Image (cartoon, rainbow, N blue to C red; front, side, top):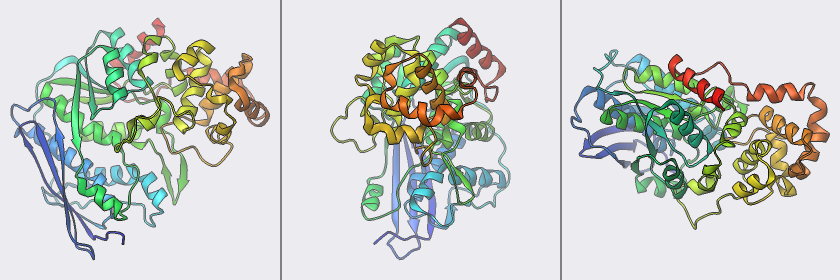
Length: 443
């Protein structure tokens, strides 16, 4: 029987040495109450864990990490036992939970896909800032193409870079080692009771992991005196997958520009969180990666390599998932066949079994896959370039594009140029935008 609880409680949050303990409770239902405690191990120990800035970052981390436990029953009543939220805080967390759980609501067919946090506290004054060193930055590393491109932009800018990740995986360690920087790892141990609840039939699904990472890395940035926390999220992450029950469902919502701006406003003052690659499409990031093939043996974008509950070590690229098909397609125009084969080890667009996925990525079947993939426009531009260059590497997918998509593109070459042109919408400071532009001009 599916667990049933009417109340979700944010019970307690504390720092003990280098360990963060985040406690929650599911209560008031036909099922017995359940308590959870998630543990995070920080790579740096706070000198003063009671400093108001540290406590505020801890509170934010407590509130966002609770989303993994809240979703088990979607309890209609939320209680923040650690202190009432102000109206602004309640509005912020209501939007983050509602939009961040959009895919979860869709997949589980939740009748009312909204989350409402209660307000009742006074406005909270911003705490005094902790000292930081300018241009000493944390770069989020995920094991794929985007973070290594961001690293090269930072190298060109001459920034002092330390890598950071929430937990780790073999390909995260491997790509971090290839970058050659110090790598801080935040250990994360979800309460095992959550897995037991899931096995008992609790609701389960996608959570806005990038928002959790933003909160966890902000805490480390405050402790370590870093000026910025830098991600490598692209322009097209801001575009949703489908419309459902009056909301746009976006698998990548917490990687998009809306969350980035909300988080900057909510978490100020202190280390600034922003994406260094925000103006770039995935297609443009692929063009950048092509200039840095020293990373080709050290990255993957296939999510089979980053499961929370891993089984046997998967292949570097499964060759069939949305990420594999998409990343292959947007990199293919920028690489000759030998370099493409070196990176992927297979001709993914030659596989007729991938045609249904290609059609979805082109926007001519169903909706965009609920994965970290770009827009149909990017895929169409990449396929046009392969077609125009006579690249047999496009295989059967190229025939689908030529027959069903190309006749509908009035100016495909203009589309190619548009997708490679940096957008103007970003949440960077002018100084950081100038540094990205300098890197792009130099290459």
